[in-house]
Structure formats: structure tokens, C-alpha cells
Image (cartoon, rainbow, N blue to C red; front, side):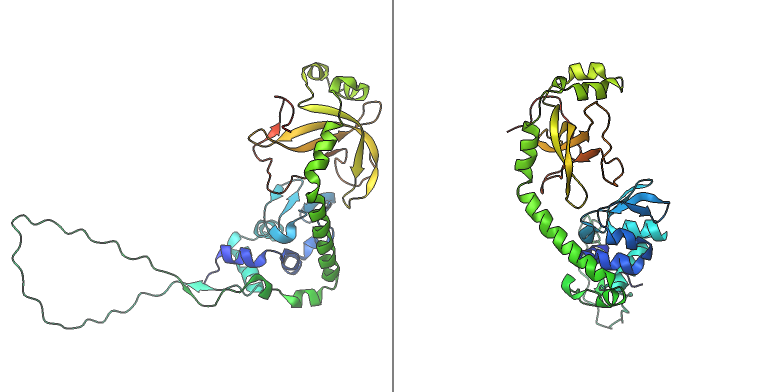
Length: 308
């Protein structure tokens, strides 16, 4: 029975998920147009319960506030269309003209009559011969694999003119992200170093007191949490909306290396700030993780200052 290899389809789909999801999951149109931003959930409804990841064109992944993350395009299609993995794989494979594979049928063996060789005397103590395991059956490929650039489905874009604007937006976003990454480590370090010890801030003290965490403040050291009196706040499009007081926590990777920062924006009186942004939980943000770094298995360290 013909089948698609997930690894091949995944490679062909990389960089094309905006077209694939537009073709196979029309319910995701709003999320595709606003990649990285919250939109109504196509499954649960509401106002802002779903978003596609900023890099969804590479991975196809997204996040439902109710169900949690969907790491790649196949699982997003399974979720929104109620498909099995096989159904999602087959639909994407067909769309991209991915190579089909099939296992060969058993070969017909025709007996050839030959004279039997003369029998040799048996050894004094015969031993049973160990049969060699059969050679593995290799699948037969019925079509040659295509490089990703040849798998572009231009007919999808032709039927959905709004995709042309999405492609322009994605290109501009990648350029902005590349520039941002160049200076990300330095700017994250500068933000951290601009902070002061947590006990120096009346706003932070009031924020923790209101949550019954006054004792926590006394146990904190500035290697774990600091207070920044004027912290930039950017919206999802990178526009500066203002400067606000913020509690800043250092995030380390699993080996304890400083990677990122978590910010909780506050008012001067110590309440969680009400910010001019449509994002859910907009008073809390993390700085982007530098390329090549990961916070998986990490967390907020209290062992000391981040390494210089």
C-alpha cells in the first residue's frame, strides 16, 4: 500500500506552512494573517484563545489557551480538523506532491533443475547450522524526492490573494527578527544590570504584600529578581507603548546559564499594570530566547548573579 514518509513531507513543508494551513484548514485564516498574535480560537471560540507561533511558517505550530501547544503543522491540522496523524500526513503529502513509497510484493521464485552435487561425508559430531536472518525488505520509491523550492503550491496563493500580503509580512518579520537577534544578548544583559535589589522598591514590596508574599521578598536576592523602575513595553508589532516599573526575574537554562528575563509590569502603587495592549496577560512578558539557547528544563535561579 503506498505511503508517505513523514520526514520527507516535513522537509517539503518547511517554509510553506502558511500555504498548507490556508489550503487545508480555512478556519485558521485569521491566525495566519496575524501570526504570533492572539485571535479567536477556531475550536473553542472566544476573543483571543489561539495563536500560531511566530515561526509557524517553518514548523506549522501554534498554541491553544485551552488545549496547550501544538508543536507542528501536522498536530495543528489534527486538532483543528479532527484528523488522525495519517490523514494529516496524506493530505499534506498530496498537496506538496511528496514522493510515494510502497513495499514490493513477494518475488516469484522459479525452481531451476540442476544436478545435485555429490554428498560429502558427515563430520563425526555434526552441529546444527545457524540460519542467517533474512535481508530487510527495502521500500520502493515511486517518485523522486523534490527539493522544497519545487514543492511550492502556487495555485493556493492564486485562489487566496490575501496570502500574498501574508508572505510579504512573513518576510519582513524574518528580517526584523534577524536584526533583533543580533543585539538580543547585549540588550537583555543591560536590562538586567539596570535593575536594583527587590527590597529597594516600594512598588514591588506592595505587589508581593498584596499576595501574601512579604516573607518571600526578604528571602530574595538580586541574583534571582530585580526591580527596574522604567522598563520598555513593546506590543506584538514591536511598537514602543511606554515605560513602566517592572519586576524582572532571571531565567536560566538547565545548566544554570543566564538565558532570558521574565518581566511583570507594575503600577507605582504596586498593582499589576493595565497596559494598552490587546494581549492576554499583557502585564507579563518574557524576552525572546537567543538563537541556539533553550529554557527547557531551566527556571528562575536563586544561586547568584547570572554569569558575565
